[in-house]
Amino acid sequence: MMIALKAATPQLPRTTAVADHVVAVDETDSTNALAAQMIGDGSLTLPDHQDGELAVAVVAADRQTAGRGRNGHKWISQPGRCSTMSYAVRIPRAIATDESVNGWLQMIAGLVTLDALNGMIEEYGAAPNQPDCLLELKWPNDVFCHGLKLGGLLSELVIPPSSGTDADADDDVVIVFGVGLNLALGACWLPTPQSTSLQLHVTGLPSFGEMRDAVAERQVKGFRERLVKFIADPKGQAESLREEMKTVCWARGRQVEAHFTDGTTLTGEAIGLNEDASLILRTQDGTDHTVRTADVGVL
Image (tube, rainbow, N blue to C red; front, side, top):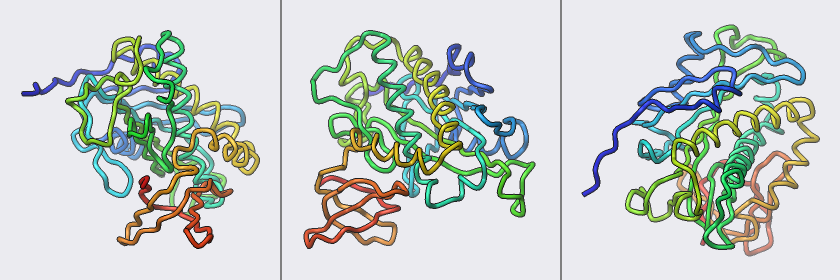
């Protein structure tokens, strides 16, 4: 019988040193929902975006009682084993609402997460158990290891109180990036056969608390660095990100099935990403299809 784990307020000294604001609670329904609520009522504020500067706030919980993923999916986590964090940043409304580039915001969140995990592993001298245990991204929002889901990401737009629906396009909005990572789950705690945990693939890792803080610290720095560049040159950065994704896109070159919200499916080879970060799926007849919103699974 598994023993229920008690939630405790996350201790995040490294993250606090680099973030503009950190909110840490032992338990909440969803860190994204808590971040959105605090932004809406003014209790969590971020300074306006300035050229070359970007504020990043962090909302962390040890346990989520109603964690969310894309398309209404649930995110199940265990306290003291899974990192559940949300990162809030202010970016220009014009970029956040531009469908030709805003799909890259989710890809940036994924790349920031990979950088943070790999950087933490290197810092502590840890190493993968197997040579093929690379960290990759399953389009559009999952962190994969050895073909299994290690984490998930969910980005949501929040309008701060100072803005409104008739606000100018130059105004800022807030993007909240929710990141859930299985860092120290034992095999018996995994919620599905398709999920995994970092400790099952990497040896020499530090304690869960150290891992969580070290990864979050790097994520704050990563969001700040990558988003500053993206805001300055969205089109140019989109092309650079497209090239970068070629090396970490788990679906690329695989036969996959896209499941759409209307219940339909599309099967084909994932060729790569378009300029707007949508997925290119080539069906058996040689036709390339654009997939913008779907759950993608390998065949």
